[in-house]
Amino acid sequence: MAAAPTSPIRELLEPRARDVEGLPVARLLPQVRARSIGPYVFFDRMGPVQLAPGQGVDVGPHPHIGLATVTYLLEGTLVHRDSLGVEQRIEPGDVNWMRAGRGVVHSERSGDAERRHGARLHGLQLWAAHGVEEEDDEPSFQHVPGAELPRVVRGGSEVTLIAGRGFGVASPVEVGSLEQAFAVASLAAGEGLLLRVDDLHRERGVLAIDGEIDCASEGGTARLAAGRLAVLAEGVDVTLSAPAAGARVAILSGAPLAEPRHMRWNFVSSREDRILQAVARWREGRFPQVPGDDGEPLPMPD
Image (cartoon, rainbow, N blue to C red; front, side):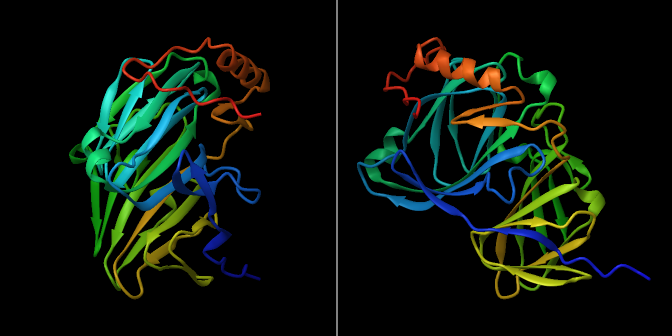
C-alpha cells in the first residue's frame, strides 16, 4: 500500500518580537520546534522600520566565536566595522560574510547621512555555524557586491543565491565546509517556483518576507503569512506561489548538523568549554578592539 502524500510544511514558526539596541526585530531561529535549519542557528528579521532624523542603529562592539554572520539588507544601509580593521558600508543586495572562527568583534551602525536625515531599514540577519574543524580558525571577512551574485530565472520568479550552492549555481561567498544555501526570490503574481529536492539540501526553510505565499506539494497546500517561517517537509518537492500579488521569500537550506551546537549570547560552539572561555575573555576585556569605533562595548548579559 502506497504511503500517503506528505504535506509541504513540517513546522510553522511564529516570529518573536525583540528589541536590539532600539531596533525592532522578529526572531525566527532558534525556537523549541526548530533549533536550526542546516547550519543556520540564528535568524532575525530587522524592521521594516522608519528611523526619524537624529535616530540611528547603534549596535556597539560585541564578540562572536564559532559562526559566520551575514546582514543582508533589503532597504537602507549600515556601516560594519570589525577587529580585523575592516570598515564596510552595507548596501541593499550586497553580502558581508564575517567568519568569526576563534574570535572576532564587530559593530553595526547607521551612517552619518542616514542618522542626520532619517532612513528606512529592513533586512535579514543570520548566523551559520562553522564546521567543527573550523571553529578555531582565524577570523576573516568577505564583501561581495550584489551584482556579482548568481541569479536564476524560472518562469515568473527570479532567485538570487546569496551564499552556498543551490538551484544549479554557486555563490562566490566562501562559506566553509558545511553544505548550505541562502537565497532570496521574487515571485510574480500567479507564478510558481518549484523547489525540487535536488535544488537544495535536506533541511529547508522559507520565510515570507512580504506578501502571502502558498506552499504546495502532492500532500496539499498551506498558506504562509508574511513574516512567518516554514520548515519544509524533507524529501518533498514544494511549489511556492504568490496567490494575490507579487511576493518576496527568503530560502535557507543545509545538511543537518552532525554535532549539536551550544549557544550563549553571541557565541556558538560544538564544545561548551569554548563558550565558557569566550565568556571569560569578553568579561575580562581580552577580545581585540574595533578600530574606528570607540563606543561602549555591549555588556555580557547575566
